[in-house]
Amino acid sequence: MSTKVHVHLFYGADPRFYRKGDDIGCLYGYHHAQSEAFALTYSKDARESRPMRLVRRALKAALGFDFIHTWRNRAEMLRSDVIWTHTEQEWLSAALMLLLCGRKAGPGASPLLLAQSVWLLDKWPSYGIARSWLYRKLMTRADRLTTLASENAELCQRYFHRDATPLLYGLNTRDFPVTPPTEWKPRTPLRIAAIGNDRDRDWETLIKAVGNDPRYTVKLATRRRIPASLRASNVDIALFSGIKKQHELYDWADVIVVPLRPNSHASGITVMLEAAAVGKPMVATDVGALRDYFPADEAAYVPPFDPQALRDALDRLAAEPAEALRQAQAAAAGLLARDLTTQHYAMQHVRITREMLNARGQASAPAAPTQQQRAAPARESRGGL
Image 1 (cartoon, rainbow, N blue to C red):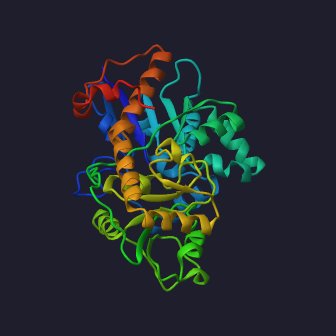
Image 2: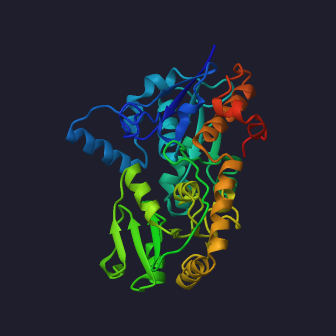
């Protein structure tokens, strides 16, 4: 019999509606785990009135997770053997639902809960006594903790005295096929693209580094509000939504910059994966365990809050085109060598799920190999992390 896995995602990521018509499967690539041994279901978005939407969002703001969305999906979750989650907003909510439904933790507990955290560890020191107590209580229902960065995994041990498994996030190579560059020539002025909506993007340092300097022209794509005091004549701020628009922005750029505030959750890694795939050299702030994904020879790393260091890194790339090309080629090769893809990301979940089931004495049958595994068995045999 196959293992029943329920993938619990945020409201708005229902595979039936997310990018409908693009046939991308599940957001984050969990669908790659579907096989004869693993049968996947996904959380569904309920149609709701405007007043109900306001109530759901208000409760989400109060709790820090979307409990109403989870409660609506409880039947499918309770029928599963394992629940996968992508962020703490999903697993905290799932843990509360399981406890309220009498599905407590312990030997033979079902379903198992695979709890992945992203922002939780960064925010933890700011939480008050009540929220910290609640989240610790809910964590007792999490059977396995995972993160997307080694720094977050270390913080799990520091704050909760529990081990966490760092996983490597991956790129959807259908949207961004890996194309190693064969040449790189900077234009004048140097074209800089910066993309992202994460709370830890440091637009201020980027604009201080290159704003109002005619040697650079910048396109900044974000939904975040940029203060009027940071506006600059050579910085175009807009939202480039959709894969086509993102590709147009990457094609336009000479260099991709990922400016960040200190964090522990690999903020900016999606943009770095995309930049590596399209063959653009990168400058990134050296925070958040980004080196888990791209070591120092594959990206130019700079200290946080240092406009001069950021500007110097850009100038070095422009002054040494051959080195910039080598860096971009190394990043593309590294992406492939480490298999930083959504397929591999899903298979890491398969491996961990088997470990969880084995620990419970309920091992599943071997999964049918994916097309990627058949094509590159040696790469998969390394174990994933």
